[in-house]
Image (cartoon, rainbow, N blue to C red):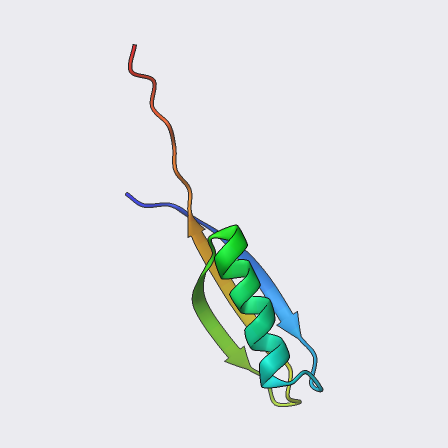
Length: 61
């Protein structure tokens, strides 16, 4: 079974698409996060859920 860890990023109402894209690209490129869910709230705030696989190393000997 694949296990994931999650990271939630919240963007305020005034943030532009370019700023959001830059931050998410940095998380994906350097932290190996992938986009899981985006929620746009009534006031204009965005909440983004990022996830990445948890790799468990098993002992061989």
